[in-house]
Image 1 (cartoon, rainbow, N blue to C red):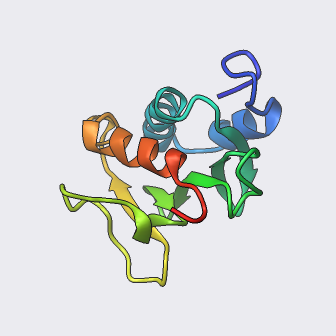
Image 2: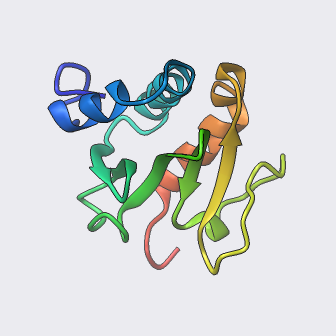
Length: 131
């Protein structure tokens, strides 16, 4: 997501982050970025905590207004949800045991494009404090 693709996106930081990734991870991250762009078009993209972070400034900062984060660690691509404990997950995609954070492992482009992944992003983008 860049200024050219979203009024709320970042310019060079995200693109530089993606360019530094190995080609396989770059394809997965590109697929996830496209899904996030469609599922949460109002989310602001930035590089934060070593990944691509998406938040809704109108709801709050990068934690309170968080939607999701694309993380690449040890060659593994994940879609993290800071408020993952609050998400419905009938397909049981969410992993993790932290107090609130949950994640989905993304091994293939097909994984990134699953309807259930987009549904988690949409739900995270609709969370409000007090819900």
